[in-house]
Each structure stands twice: as structure tokens, then as C-alpha cells.
Image (cartoon, protein in one colour):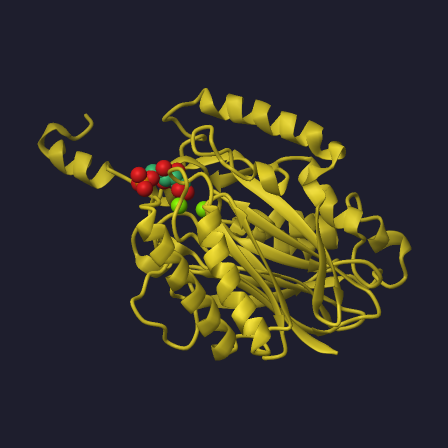
Amino acid sequence: MKLTLSVIKADIGGFVGHSASHPDVINEASESLSKAKKEGLLIDYHITSCGDDIQLIMTHQQGDESEKIHRLAWDTFVAGTEVAKKLKLYGAGQDLLSDAFAGNVKGMGPGVAEMEFEERKSEPVLIFMADKTSAGAWNMPLYKMFADPFNTIGLVIAPTMHSGFAFKVHDLKEHKKITLNAPEDIYDLLVFIGAPTRFAIKAVFSREADEIAAVTSTERLSLIAQRYVGKDDPVCIVRCQGIFPAVGEVLEPFAAPILVEGWMRGSHMGPLMPVSLQESTPARFDGPPRVVAAGFQLAEGKFIGPRDMFADVSFELARQQANEMADMMRRHGPFEPHRLPLEEMEYTTMPQVAEKLADRFIALD
Ligand code: F6R
Ligand code: MG
Ligand code: MG
């Protein structure tokens, strides 16, 4: 059965501040998708949230970038925004950067990750959702899952994975893409994906089977809107088992928290903390950045799940380490490397301050 799995997400209002989504907004979105399911446009759907972002997780047979599906997501976010406005939620409609839908939500604010594939005999998928960070946050975890034998032993001992994976990388500033193969191109690959502000892994493919393995949302809100409108808060879909890494190999990178950009005012480095769906409510200094993992088995396009994968006790140490890393970074206050370099900060008063002090700046001797 050929199936499309679409995850389309947006921040359409925070409860309280930028910390979480409101149940009434989620209910409104559920009504909209339930109608689309009854009408036969969707096979199935699941709605959840990560921090202040609403996540529409949908299966259908309309293919990638379907106008009908994108319109449904857009209309659902518009309806949710009306509810958010009534409740005076914070930043109601924040990620809807345009007044009218123009055929595709890409470039209009919402984040999109979609993949079309033939549903296997058994199809386990993990949907990762992050809040208070940007698209490049998936680079290191995806590299570890699909190219690092110290993370994924299957690359070494599973004949189905031994020929490696291909990585499609987007240059978010120059709007270009390149595909590089692991293992032979890994040093070249790391030159780019090691700079996650500019380069983001868009998709990963099994080289043996020429099958899609993972896809991410790579929209950069600030580049779309040319101003600060909140962090991208990206999503990522990963197919697991068989010709792909096992569920445990896919979750493993998050056991060792890394620093990502985002956090307070989208302008800081902080640890990416793996949490349960219930704990995806950034609070301390509007963070630290969170990642959740919803696990599903697909059955003829129906969602069996979710299982809340990071609710497991084996991620408690990672949460503790992330809290310690958060403390260590917070110690720097307004100094780098906690604060992002000037050119990467989503907010900056530097031009105004420099202008005000222009005649007090004098040449060095
Ligand atoms: C970061 C984020 C928050 C806000 C901060 C200020 O992605 O969403 O840290 O940047 O709460 O929000 P405003 O400018 O809306 O008052
Ligand atoms: Mg928000
Ligand atoms: Mg958010």
C-alpha cells in the first residue's frame, strides 16, 4: 500500500507565554482533521503538541506536497488561531506568516516533513518533535543513527544496512542541495552538517533498497520572514527496523544531550533535553530546548500508538545531564558561547547600539 505520512506543525498560540499549547486549540484542530478523515481525504491522523507547537500527524494517499493536504493543514491552523485569539493566548497565529493560502504551506511559516512509501509488512515509525530550537538540531542525531557504527551496530553486523545510507543536505542560505553517501563521503558530509545553522539534513535513504528512511522539516522562519518570528521548532520522521536502524538505535543519540541553538529568544546555545510528551513544556529561561519522540506502528495507514518513547527511565540520566549542562551554560549569562554569535542571534540591538555610540568609537592607535 503506497502511503504518505505528513507531519505539519505550527505555533499558533502559547499557553502560558511560549511554554505550551492549549487543549481547546488542540480540540479545534482535532475536529478539523476528524472531518477530513470522515470525508476520506485522510486515512488517519493524530494530533499532539510539543511545547507551544501543534503537530498534525496525518496519513493519506495524496503524495508529498499535496495541495489538498496542505490546505487542510493551513485551514486547521487558521481555525485554531481563532480559538487562540479568543483565549488571548500568547502570539496567536504566530507562525502563519501569510494572509492567504497559496497552494503549499512551505515558505508560509508552518514546518513540514513528509514521506511517501510502500507500507511494509510491519512499519514502525518514530516522529521526533522539538521545541525552542532550529532545523539543524537533527544533524548530529541523524548522522549518529545512519552513519556512526558506535551508535548503530546494525551498520556493522546487519547485512541489510551494511552498504550504508545516502544523506540529502540542504544549504538553507544559498537554497541548494547535495546528496552525499555514507560511509565513503562522511568527511565531506561532516564539513557541511557540522555547521547546522546553515546546512540541514533534509532526508536519508537506504542505499541497498533505495528507500526513504528519514525526513525533516528544514524551514527557517527567520529566513522566510526576514525578521525574528520564533524558532523553527523542527520535526523529523524516521522509519525503523529491518533495512533501517532498530528503534533503540534511532533513540540512542538522544541519550547523550548535545548543545543546540534556540532557547530564550532564539538566541542561545542550550542542551537538547529528551522528555516525555507531557514534559514538553519549556519553562526555565523558556527552555531548555526539548525533544519528544512519538512511536507508531502503521497498519494500512492507521496509527497504532503513540508510545511515548522518551518517557522511559533509561532517559532519566540524559535529562539530569541536560539540566546540568543548562546550569553551566546559564552561568555565562549574556556572554558567548551561551549567547549566539551576533550574526546568528534572532534578536539583536547591536545595530541600534552601534549607531548610538558611533561618534564615541575612535580608531585604535
Ligand atoms: C524562543 C521563544 C521565547 C521568546 C521569548 C520572548 O523561541 O519562543 O523564548 O523568544 O519568550 O517572546 P516575545 O518576544 O514574544 O515576548
Ligand atoms: Mg510561541
Ligand atoms: Mg515553539
